[in-house]
Length: 367
Image (tube, rainbow, N blue to C red; front, side):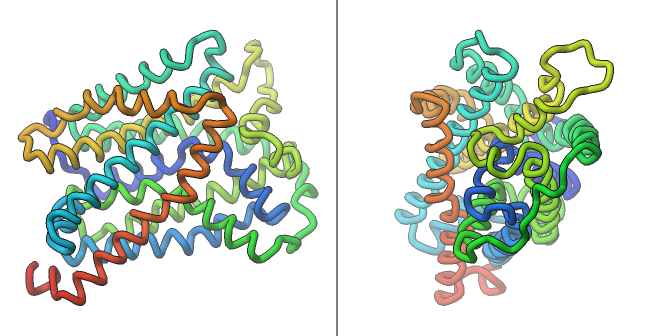
C-alpha cells in the first residue's frame, strides 16, 4: 500500500459503506421505529430499502453521465461555476455538521458506558486525532482497514444476536398491522437516513477501481444494512419491549445490558458488546472527514489530498460541543438528518441530472 493512494476496490467500498451505515443512528433506530410504526416498526427497513434504491439510482445516474468525475467538477459544468461552487460548499458544510453531531452522540455513548469520568471534549479529540491518522494515508488505507474491522464488528454482533434470539419473547412483536400508513411512510423515510453515507459516493465514486459497478455496490450495501436493521429492531422490541424502546434514547444499549454472558467475571459486560460500534462509528467519521477534506483539496487544487484534514478537526470539534446535553444532541442529530438528509441523497443529484439532460451536457457528447 502506498501512502496517499486514492484508489479502492469494489469489495473494499462495499465493506466501507456497510460499516459507515452501521453508525450511531443504529443505536437509536428502534426508538424511532417504535414511535413511527408501533409494533410494526421492525418492517420499516424493508420499505426504507425502496427509498435507498432511489437514492442509489439518482447518485449513480449522475456519475455515469459524467464518467470519471465527481460533484466538484460536475456541478460547475451543469449550473455555472458560481452556483456550482455554492452547491459544493453546502455539500462540505452538511458533511462536516453531520460528522460533528455524530461525534457528539458517539462521545455521549462512550461516556455513559465506558468512560463516565472522562470529559466529553477529551473523548471527542481522541477520536478526531485517531481519524486524522487513518485518513491522511488516503482512501486505500481506509478500505484495507475496513476489511479487517468488519470481522471485529459483525462476528461479535452475530454472537450477541444469537444469545438474544434464544432468550427473547417473540410475542412482543404482536399485534401485527396496527400501524398508521402515514406513520409507516414517515418512519421508512427516517430509517432510510441511515443510508446517508451514500452521499460520499458523489466524491469518491470515481476512485473505485470499477466505477461501472457503483449501482450494485450501493444496492448491496443498503440491502445488507436493511436486513440488519430488521433484525436489530425486531430483537430490541422482543428483548426490552416496544414501549420501553420508544422511551429510551439508547434502546439497543439497554438490550445489550440485559444480556448475561455465561461465566463472565466482568461487571459491565456491555463494554465488550459495544466495541464493534466504536469501530463502526470510527469508520463513518473517517469517511465523512475524508470526503470533506478531499473535496476541499480538489477545489483548492492541492497536490496532497490530506492537507485540509487537520484544519477540519477544530471545526468538527466545535460543532460537536454545541449541544448542551444528551437529549439536545439526539434532537439535533434527528432533526438535521430529517431536514437535510435528502438534499444530496436525492434532490441535488436529481436536479443536476435533469438539467444536464435538458442542456445536453455530459453523456456521449461530453464523455
